[in-house]
Image (cartoon, rainbow, N blue to C red; front, side, top):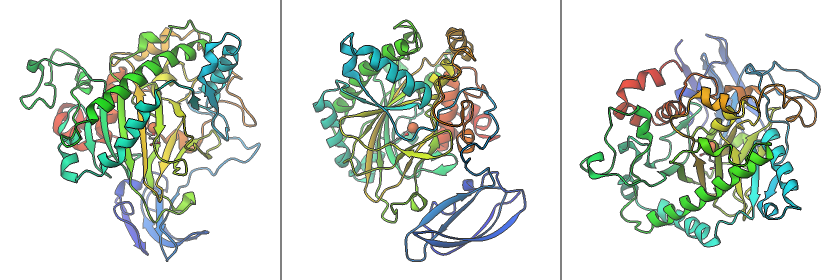
Length: 468
Ligand SMILES: O=C(O)CCC(=O)C(=O)O
Ligand SMILES: [Fe+2]
């Protein structure tokens, strides 16, 4: 079915015309003529497609985007929707993100309170703030202060460390080069991983990447040397110090997670990877963004984190710079405000599998803002060779379905339901399409950075990217 789009009014390229916005939702062949009017904008569209309509219009009051689908509208109190096909628990109708004070762990009198709050956040929400996390203020300040000058470097300096030259998906990628949910994200980023020492014979002649080793699985290529722009000599030590601090924090955090879920304190450490990933992210200012969601472009589209089992996110801009949102069960986007002194922790797909869906990877996104925004997600890695059988079977009896029924409930609606928008999010390991974690992760990376996939992973490219 050909995609055909006609737009009236002004749209901001390249976001307006991205063909991937047309995703299955309208009945094939349906022609639609429509208009929209809301508090900030007026627009008109005509489209014939087999996909979602995305409208954008600007008649003087700002660019506006909205997805029009034929999916069920949001449920009202008491309404029913089909159960999640997997039958797992889902996050609840949370309306705010809880804060866990890690200093409560230091006293036997206060630790039970922390564990109970943590359990609630993990089972019912999948998103939380941590305070008193003991990352030294100087480590955070050095990193935060480095971001504006780093991203202000000339394009050629950033391109020296281009991710497109790295089979390990490490380095700089420019605005619009990554896609989420089929749409280009309005952000630029540097991606790094835990540093390792490689022997010269393991590396290519320019030293920038690790050669493929026919004796190891392809997904081992996710591990390789980092790339830094030569004109920012301090960056390597700033990044490495931060990765070390976050590795220590997250490993300790896993102990609390295990205890809060009634497991022995070291029960989760067996799944830990030797390699974690860190991103430095810059969302450029988007002057046409208004304060309403309708009029904001995609910083990063709706997704579940696929790079590990927990993400520790530093919102590295002044507190008024917002944009991060998490999706609750009812399909409402809940703001995750930027609170100084905190890190945001959210569950990734790996942990959802390990806990048999008891702790869900919550869908989230970032909206573009008028001010530029910086953020630093650290993705705690899962062993690349971890198989679903081991992940699910390991703690399977503990997280057996039924045992935790009721734990995820909060307010109306009951458990086991995920919003239609949440169910649309691609999650290959969760749905069991790939057996090994490393393979599922490689596929996600290739789909997000297709230029790298085409260049370095010819043998699997079609299989991973075709059949979307
Ligand atoms: O920038 C943010 O606040 C969140 C980024 C994010 O969700 C991601 O990179 O996975
Ligand atoms: Fe994320």
